[in-house]
Length: 348
Length: 131
Image (cartoon, chains in turn brown, yellow):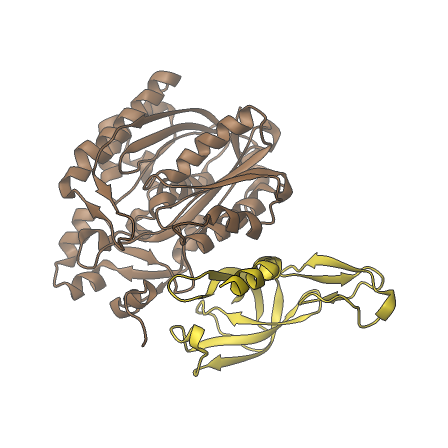
């Protein structure tokens, strides 16, 4: 059965506070902080993009896994901010992590859930013995139009999972997965456009909640599990509030989602979001504990996973930087620096 | 553009993973790669060897009048890093809030170095970051 052999993440250290963005647009920071349940977000440096974040996360995952990178048979990078429109991020990552050349690689795009689509692809490929190991990464430097509500949450970060099937090498088994997908125009970015557009409140009920709830319930039906069978739950987190409401709708407690809810501190890392939440949970989980992870990608779809932590996690603990350490290591910037980092203002 | 592609392609291993050379005969390591060992001359048996990426700052300087490719990021710090394996390597040193001085321990990070204009290639490269 496919499982997680190693995991790793990367969060850029620059942060901008809600107060600083609200100051520029003459908005009420307190009501935004309360409404979105977020305090600050991560911002990439000028020399960071979805490829550099993916490489750093993948290198951390490889250190954690302890595997020989030459044995990786597939590299998938999920992102909606791939640096090139044509030329894969996955080949850059494969070369930078020292993987061999006898591998398949591709960039995936499904808004915020492309990385978890990669998990499912690798589950099939490892379970069928087509490959020994695969690595899937969710990485983004997401964009929010200046003055748009998204600007408060769209952040940067990534996470990587090494997937294999040898139980003795795994830190967690993936017991089951289920997906729910529809054609829902809740959020999009046209080719060549710098910023995404969205359907405002339409992104909530018909988008996020419908797909998260359906995919999670499909997983419950498939496995016979109920919310109380899980120690932790991680939901995609476009803001700090939606995952709390989704948890309530499905019958999870706030305690179950507490550790994996990172958006209030680093913003919405898009393709990285649910996978980063899973990494934060794995930093703390002990053998025998179960984790529910349900991602969401606009457009729209959700992938849900039932994961059970195995004994292997103790042996590999401490091999990679903890997510909480990355989150604490930060440097605040003002709005002008933020615009410069996002390439919105340039020097003549 | 063709020249940029070929030049970049040849240097990918060095730029991404700090792959240098090691003389199999005497064990001396080099970065960047070279064909002939300074010690062994015609008896050189050179192999490719990935450096650990860890080292210490041998010398450093802050650049305030940058080259065109780096005009957006000035001021920035460059340095000569003495790798654990011995070679001294020039590189950019990332500002992560830690003080940079001679002897500061650093490791490599994977970053964007520069781009060939709006439509050209993106050049990724190792940089050094204080530990």
